[in-house]
Length: 535
Image (cartoon, rainbow, N blue to C red; front, side, top):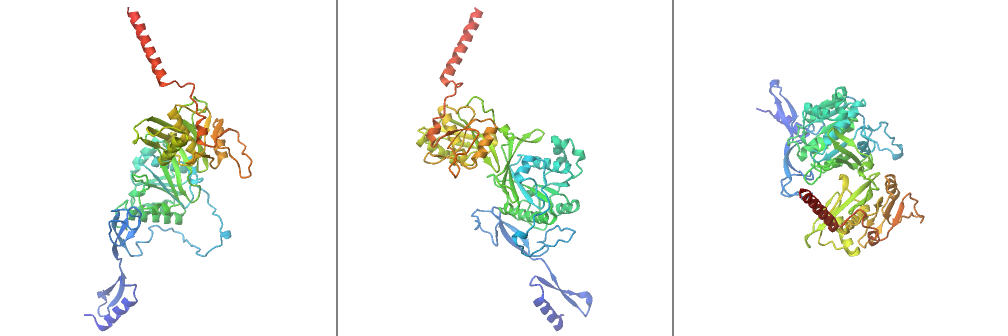
């Protein structure tokens, strides 16, 4: 039976203790002089998190009130104990953080240098290499080559004397070695890559423990969707697990100074799987794009806190791994015979200018149900340019199926390619082409006016370097009124109808009717010759 003193002690401890989550505990071993303590226990509660935007709700609802998505709230169990919210990794050395506000001129730049991966195209997208203490998220479709790219980069870092921890949550260590041996540059030196450590694990605590022991300069995690935190009662790949694991990896990178590269899956719509929070908390977001049936691959920077965005790196997938592609390999011979429906255009991606071939094809369709298909181009902008061609170029395209694409697997989204797309569609419809060695550049307005884009000299310098001699565009002027000096002939146009007048019928091109007639004559002549020999 509890005495009055014991009851008074319990009341005092309860009122002054850590809160209602404390439990009154009586030590019976003390005999008559019982000792009463408060023991804190973790309290769990059920919450519902949206798998689309990551918002947390206290009760289940059919529609997420934050993003408006239906049937995306998933129940998870959250713990209120402080131990559950503590990252599972800590450094051995004491880390002191100066929380005092510092004037901007007094902030000193860091002394560490970027870590060059050895892949020049990959380093270009990163802004010069990996920044120590940063987290990079790389996304792409299945089978596009994300693991191949990161394994080649990890091997080059290890060959340069850097310690690298490659964590594979989807393959075993032996499978990773087999894939490394298939790569040309890795397979030849796989026995000498002592600095490349491979770990096959899905437990985040085990991964961080190995990172604490090895202290690598770069940690590669392939992929985040299979990694889980055991302290969180949720399945791997859920929004709660992705957010928790990514937060701990960011804390790991900031505390230890190692660069972390995380591979993420994409949805059917091409977006990174998981809550949008992942893209906000990481330092860089890269997209690995390309057609699985096409050899070319493009690494595109969507976000980068330490470098330019929208930068692209070009690769080619071969049987022995990824090979870096030079700009000139994407362009054919400028002096080749012209082809109707093919126009070259210098476009800008990040800090580099690339020459892209715009291709178009027209075929007879049905009025009211004509097809409009694009690959690498904006379909809505193509529909607008078709309307401009019909209104101002006097072309009848309402009953034509029109197909347009950007060759080489590149994606062109800027308005500077409007004139090239318009000339490609008009040339395919009329069976006319531009003169050899000609590029087209400019934005086309709804009124049919041709406007010059920005960074003209960079675009034309790249075209001249690759052997193109003339450009169709609006004549550029600087702000002072002086014309820009360019080492390339400028065919000045102000409206779309002026540009359409430059299209000409190729000399090598024969009409379809004459080609069929010549073929029939040749066949009939062969038959007469064979019959004469038989006689």
